[in-house]
Picture 1 (cartoon, rainbow, N blue to C red):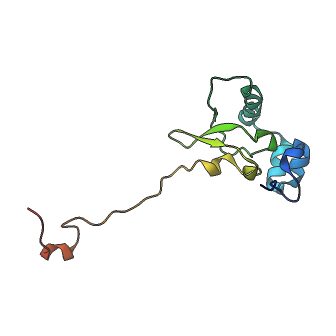
Picture 2 (picture 1 turned 90 degrees about the horizontal axis):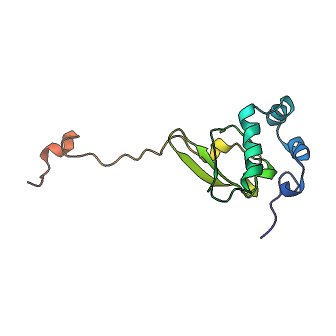
Picture 3 (picture 1 turned 135 degrees about the vertical axis):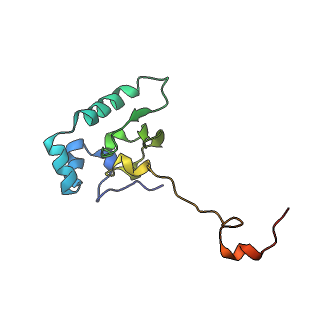
Length: 128
């Protein structure tokens, strides 16, 4: 399988600062101003996670966190408002936000109309 390339470079080979320079301006500004406390705690927890063997994934509510190359290979549980959705971080997810992978709304599927739901069913035979 071919290596994943992000804007002409391999994400695994880049440091955090080099990777941030490849990101769009909105995200670059976020990192230059400093990460919020909750997001910086997530990065520290991911560093410690490799040493802990009992846990399945790291849980987080940081849906706005950008996936960094140092997160590749981890399993993160992203809160969708009801439960934690476990996501394996791969190279293809780098540069996107965690919230994109844990949808907050289910897809709505309408069923067919029941008897009496429309005027057309008034004259159809029904089971008794």
